[in-house]
Image 1: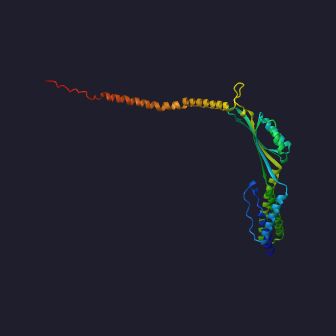
Image 2: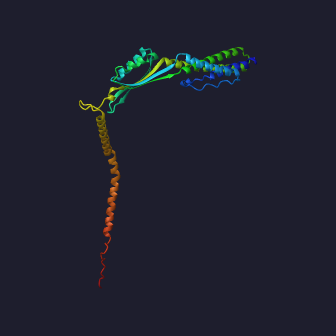
Image 3: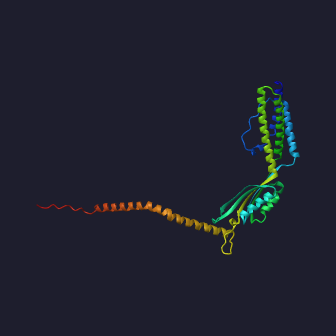
Length: 314
């Protein structure tokens, strides 16, 4: 048994090095803590050769398999009925075989402080029907304010994940064979710990592969639905000023609003504050001036002869 165990460690080391050579950045998409440290094993020269061959085979496989592309879209539309359009988009997603990820209907305000509805919807539809879904979403809208479409090619990452999964499953099978033949308690515990680690890695890689498959199969569309009232111009009678005239009118309205706000604030706040500060200062000034004049009036003027008291004769 003691001779079999070192050979098994060499085999497991080869599989680990092969898996490390194809590390995939897709692990960032998954939540959770870091994986436990892999068991330390002896280095074997044949492991490096196997790692190089697996890396080359993964690169070749990436160029031969169907491309895995994640397609998403974001757009903002202006409609006359926000709630009705949100409900129609949700129904469209379900009819196409997709689903609604999230939806939110809330109230916003125009420049004239008028309360209007606004909505945010996120749906997923089959990737091959993304163009059709976008056409239906934009059909009959007042305006499409912006539209953004993105694509991410994850073919290489997907192939690397499959290679890692294959290596991990091979290591798991070898460890299970060693576990069946182990008789020493220490050997059983060590082999069991390694099995736990590799099974956890297998589940993580499977989760990453599933994420890529679902993200590529179902495209996400984020839609912001804005009410038509938010883009309506200023109307004066039947005349709709545009361009510089509209900007001038808006500037005048803003100035008048600011002036009225200043007057109200001055009368209600600034004026009482000035009165409470200036009134005592003015009273002090009057009192000081009165005292000064009083003292000055009692003082003899320059050049004026002083009267000498006349002595009475006895």
